[in-house]
Each structure stands twice: as C-alpha cells, then as structure tokens.
Length: 497
Length: 72
Ligand code: HEM
Ligand code: HEM
Image (tube, rainbow over all chains, first blue to last red; front, top):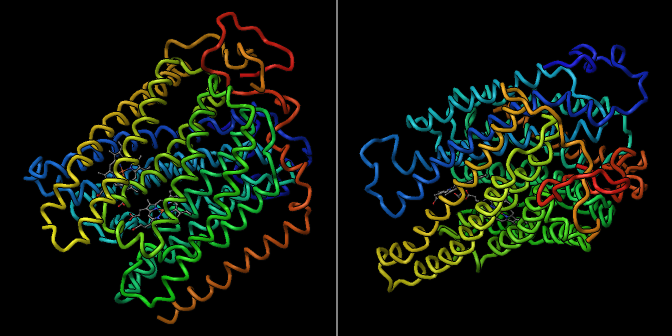
C-alpha cells in the first residue's frame, strides 16, 4: 500500500534521502491516506481477535457456574480457555488496535506521512503468526504458567521481533517529524514504545531464559504484568483521550500544564506499582509497602487527568449526541478515573485482605482493560476509520447498538461483580463459613456476568459488521460513489452546547 | 549469570538515564514552557479551534455545510 507521496525504506532511514527540504507540514488527508493500509491491517486483525477472545470469554464465564460444560476435552478446560481469552484480548485485540491508533496519531501529530509501510505490514504479519502459534500452544497445554507471559517459548521471539520493528518505526516517524513542538499524546506514545521492549526483554530473561529462583519469579512476573497494563496500554489509552477529546469538540485541552504533570508523575510512580499484586505474599514488608505508597501516589496523575478532561468537556456535553467517538472516549476517560481509584483501594493492605483472590480483582481488570481501554480504542476507531477509508459509517443503528450494548454491558459486568467479589472475600475470611457456601455466594454474580458477556458480544458483532461494511463500501463491488464524510454538516443545536 | 547481570544492571541504569535526558531535552527545547502553543497542536487551518469534528449521529436530514460550523 505504498503511496507515491511517501518515502521508501531508505529515505525513511536516512536524513539525506528524506524529503527534509519540505518544511511543509503534510496535509491531513495525505497523512491519513498513507496510514490507510497499515492501520486497517492492525484494526481488522485486532477485531478478529476480539471476536475469538469473546468466544473464549463466554465459554470461560459459563464454565464458572456450569463446570461440567465441555469438561471432557483437555483443551476446553477452564484453565486453558481462560488463558486463551486473556491472550487473545490482550495481545491480539488490545495490542493490535493500540498499534494502529498509535501509528495514526503519531503521523498526524508529527505531520508526516507513514513511510515504508511494508516494514510495519511485515511486523503485523509476524505479530499475528506469533500470536496464533502462542494461543494454539496455550490450548495444547504448552503454557509457561507465568501470567501475561503464558505463550510458549516458540512463539515469543516472533512477537518480540514484530514489536521491535513497530517500536523502531514509531521512533523513525518521530525523528522525521515536521512539527517540532510535541503534544502530550506524543510523550505518552514515545514512552510506551520505549518502555515495552525493556519490560518484555527483562521479563523474558529473568523468567524464561535464565529463570530467577523462588519468590523472585513472582516479583518479576508482577513487575512485568503490572507494567504491561500501566506503561503500555494506559499511556496509549491516555494519548488517544488527550487527542480525541479536544479534537472532536473543537476546544483545546483545559490545562496543558496539568497534562504534562500527569505524564511525568505517571512515569515516576507507575513503575513502582508492580508488587501491589503481591500484598500478603512472602516478600519483605518494605517491598510491598513501597508499591502501596507508589499506588497511592498515583492519585496525582489520575486526579489531575480527570480534572483536566472534565473541565475540557464542560459546556460541550451536548456534542455527545452527534459523535460516537466522543461517547466512547468520554466513557473511557471516566472509567480510567473509576478503575484507577478502585485499583488504589485494592492495593491498600486492609482492602486487599478481603478483595485479593476474589472476583473483585477480575472486575477491576475489566474496569481497566474494558471500560477504560477497550472503550477508548472503539472511540478512536470510530474517528480514524472514516478518514482512512474516505467513507462514512454505513449504519447509525449499528453504532447505537454497539455503544449501548457495550456501555450497559460493561457497567452491569463490573459493578455487580466488584460487589460479589467483596462478599466472596468477606465470606472466605470467616472460618465458620464452609468453602462450598462461599462458592454458592458467587453464583448469582457469575451468572449475571455471563449474561452481560452476551450483551458485550452483541456489541462486538455489531461493530464488526459495520467495519466490514465500511470496507465493502471502500473496496467492494458496491462502492459508495461520494465520500460524504468530507461534507461539513451542522448539527441541530448550536456548537458549544 | 554474568552476562545477564550485565544486561540487567545496564538496562536499569540506561533506562533512568534516558528518562532524565528526555526531561532535560524537553526543558531545553521549550517543550515544557510554551503550553499555549502545544495545546493547539491537534488543530490547524483545516480544522481550527471552535469547529467540531466527527458529526455522525442524529444529523439533520438536509445536510448543508456551514462556514465556521462543524466538520465531519
Ligand atoms: C465478552 C466480554 C468478556 C467476558 C464475558 C470476559 C470474561 C472473562 C472471564 C470469565 C475471565 C476469567 C476470570 C477468572 O479467572 O476468574 C476473564 C479474564 C480476563 N479478561 Fe475478560 N472477558 C471479556 C472481555 C475482555 C476484554 C475485551 C478484555 C481486554 C481488553 C478482557 C481482559 C481480561 C483480563 C485482563 C483477564 C484476567 C483477569 C484476572 O485474572 O484478574 N476481557 N474475562
Ligand atoms: C492508579 C491506578 C491503578 C492501581 C493503583 C491499580 C491497582 C491494582 C491492584 C492492587 C491490583 C491487584 C488486585 C489483587 O490481585 O488483589 C490490580 C489488578 C489489575 N489491574 Fe489495576 N490498578 C490501577 C489501574 C489499572 C488500569 C488503568 C488498568 C487497565 C488498563 C488496570 C488493570 C488491572 C488488571 C488487568 C488487573 C488484574 C491482574 C491479574 O490479576 O490478572 N489497573 N490493579
């Protein structure tokens, strides 16, 4: 998908061959066109993994209240299906859509077209081959047993190569930027691409190549696991919110200083958070205490980000009526605050005593990874796809179904399960309650989760149909004649309301 | 273990060093001071401040472009 306007591999690597004479900043349409093939590849692959991950999710969820269901085959047992779900949605859906959004944002903010797309397309190919091997390996029973690094040894090097290509290319795009000033989203994106290879290689060295002994393994595992969430997905999600919120409503971010403060305090504190997953574990108390303190300090970036987003939106809530991007992004931004504050509470010792080893943690996981991150990525895709395909979304109804099924679905998933998990934890601490009774206490909450999972699944299918439809309009036999997206349209209410 | 320790100690020194360098670079190049300019970076003459982008749902049927109004 190389467009004539974009430089090739050599030009991309060498300043001499690059179009440096062009002080001119590229037009938005030119940039969007250059990213089109690559970003579509990541979005499509990510969405296919979301559908696969959703099937695994529903099976895993159902099995928790109907354990005899499909229990005859080893590869269909809960342990494997749950892990296949985790890897499909984290490394398939979330990571791939994140890369697509990151590349698009980086090119737009740097004001350069995407260069030598074939390099990134090859990375996408490697990533998906590695992931397919990894997930098939997990279902076969080849898991490493280390959470968030479950994929077997024969898959991970391929993923690493793919990621290294993506990281290097993102930095190359940045190196050739035509806009010298940096926007806060670029800080987050650059940090994410620098952090991830460090985390991944260190964890692979200490857990797979030359495994550390004993409890140190758990410490490294959670330093890595936490940082994948906090230093890879979170910054990309925040980068997207910081771009799309002002962009959609047409108003600059309330306080740029607050956004910079949010970035540097996140960079300072998040890396220390990992051991809060091990509260109560066999570790020196100071190790855990440092993590708890750092977790509480996270209130600074979280609250400053929340204030900033809220005051940016004030006076513009009426625009939610018109923009699907805004709906999903605002939902994601609010969820970032809620899930993070829930996380801060979970890290404190007295809270963890009750909530650890319960469904409360699973609820928090989905509050963060779904209500914040996934919803933010959906919002980003709603903005990016019409621009890179030059076509409008074919069905408003499917957009509404997608939004309401996922928004209601995830609220009804995480809020009751957080409470159910708390009751479970309380009962577990009570020595007079037999363990089977504890299991019974969780049943209604787990059944409700399966129902809400179905609602989420409907939302995912609605979005996928709209996605395939928009692609058919662009590339299929029934092409839409006019790119209507570019026609300015005035909503019924005055702007600003 | 030698080479591994070397890599790990190396990376734990190199990493904060890169972060500090990034902060120093940002300060030197005015990235931390010109907030008014930075906050305008998502906008340009094609899509200026004051103009809503992404109007997809609940649009009035007869859509007409309005100057300075709302795009996309
Ligand atoms: C159809 C929607 C979904 C349903 C019904 C669902 C269900 C589940 C279930 C049953 C588990 C296993 C929990 C356990 O071990 O007790 C799980 C784990 C997990 N899921 Fe999902 N999931 C869904 C979507 C997603 C998505 C889209 C993401 C990420 C973007 C995600 C991220 C995770 C994570 C990180 C875990 C591990 C949580 C932990 O161990 O604490 N899920 N999910
Ligand atoms: C300040 C912010 C946050 C803090 C302090 C925090 C804290 C925590 C703590 C203490 C746990 C472990 C709970 C336990 O096992 O008892 C946890 C688990 C988790 N958190 Fe957060 N959290 C924060 C934000 C987030 C965000 C934004 C996301 C998603 C992007 C997220 C995703 C997860 C996931 C997936 C788990 C489950 C890990 C597992 O056991 O598999 N958290 N968090």
